[in-house]
Amino acid sequence: MLTIEERLEAAQAHLEDRRHESAALIFESILDATPNNLPATMGLAALKVADGDLETAEDLVTSALARGQMEAGVLALAAKIAVQKGEQEKALALAEQALDLEDAHIDAGLIRANLLLQQGQLEQAESVLDRLLNAHPNNPSAVSTSAMLLIELGNFQPALDLLQRALANTPDNEELVAALGHCLSNLGDHKRALKHLESAHLKDPANPFYTLSLSRSLLETGQTSEALRVAKRSIIRFPDLLPAWLTYVEIMIRRGEAAAALREFTPVVRRNPDKLDASLYLAQAYRLAGYPDEAIDVLAPIFKQLDRLPPEKIQNFQIIARDCYLAVGAFENVAETFSRNPAAALATGELLCADDFFVLPPNQSNLELIPLMRFVKRSFEQGTPPNVIGPSTSGQLVDVFGPVNYLPGDLDANTDGAGLPDSRRFIPLTQILGQPDTLSSDTLDQGPYARVLEDRKSTWARSLADIEGPHIGVCWDPDRPGMLLEDFRHLFSFPKGRLVSVVWEAARSQLEGEEDIIDAGAHFRDLHDLTALLSECDLVIGPDSIPLHLAGSLGRPGIVLLTPAHPWYWHSENGRSSWYPSIRVIKTRRFGHWADILTDVAAETNEAIAELLEA
Image (cartoon, rainbow, N blue to C red):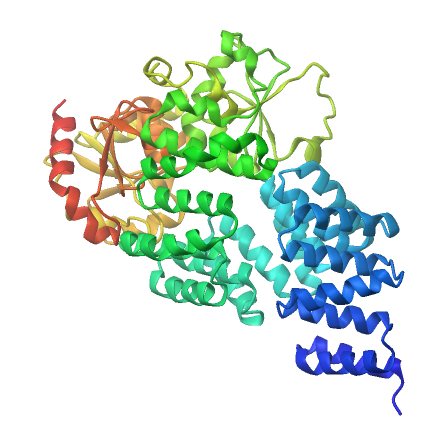
């Protein structure tokens, strides 16, 4: 007759081969003979969690705890069940109990770290993960969660290094592969990300994170039909999972089916028991569909209960509300989207001193960063280079507005504060938007604020001197679903002058065969060349992109082409950008393929081109 140990080994073998039903049968047979067997109890409970049978799993764990089997693994599984049931406070308490018994217990530590991340407590999460990695340096879950934290902090290169080292040891681990795909996606490399995310999804097609990440990468590489198929499978399998629905809604909107998407999503919102979460997701859906005013209406009742919300939900609410207020130009309401204001000294016009630091949010895109950089230079004493801490990927862009003292990445992770004076103050850049009178026509229209290096300007002026003007800078997106050169090249007329490409890297490949467009990007060394060239252009035209933002920050005339759900920084009055008065804002009337929807604005754009070139 087989021993208990042999049966447990057999069950474990079934688990490793993902034969859950066979493993469950063996665990049940062990418990029939020895009801108090802890490994069988925990194994069966873990399987029930995986199958979504939380009630049975909780009964098994509760019985083990009642028998005095107060082990770290039991408490960690109880914490996992609590997480699945949405009982976050209970889960955190159970995970901490488990860590009191075993300070580097991998499952309990990961649960605690993830809960802290959700609450925005990044430093505490980092401390837990450091301890786990020291004890379990090759554990895929510890590595992937640590990498996710580094990504959240804007430290993309360390995250890539960590994941690539781990994958060298376990190249087929889908958790690590998915984390690498997520990291590449955050860096904007959606093509490479897609390969990794597809691999992870094939290994575990039931994992909602893999499914959502895959559908988003498919969307960002222009494969909207396949993205829709993956998203549909996700909402069928997880009919109440709001993030899955939001991804599905965004794909439908991009396909030009916003009304249908909102009709499908509304009943899901109504039946969701978490009314707050449901409202936040509905507001995001309205915002994605180009209805920020409706999103504000959805969010309005939440202001009345803001004090009673957990910190992470307050933060989510404030971010969404702030974006909507900025998008509609309700600048007077932006201040109420901040809970605290560490930059209070700026409210009185006080200049920052040499010991103060601006902190760039790591989850903020470079396109969001550019309009806010005007406040960095104006807040420091004249002649004092500002101190800025931010993601490594933003360093070159920040230098365009310099000179600055730039510290890349998370301060504690990269410098340990060494050499920094005790009197320093750290001012989150976005907090400046909460200052009285910061957002007004006077503060947003104080002239150019990007710098142009004189030697680069002279070089580009000489290069263009023999080319008949006006010089018209044109830009486009590198991939679908963005706007490609072919989408607008034949729609818009340029009655005189010469087109100059201001794109670089991958997007330049679209110039093949376009002999009448000057490929200036082939000669860019860095963004200083781009700003110098833009300063010599008579007009810049294209989609939401770094060249259009930099043209605006230089005060150069431009035309930006947008879909209805414009980003907050392209709010306009009478067709003029509020943040960049030299830029005309032209929006299509609908979503869809750029080649189709640009016909909506062809006449208006051609009229604006002619007017600006005559000015």
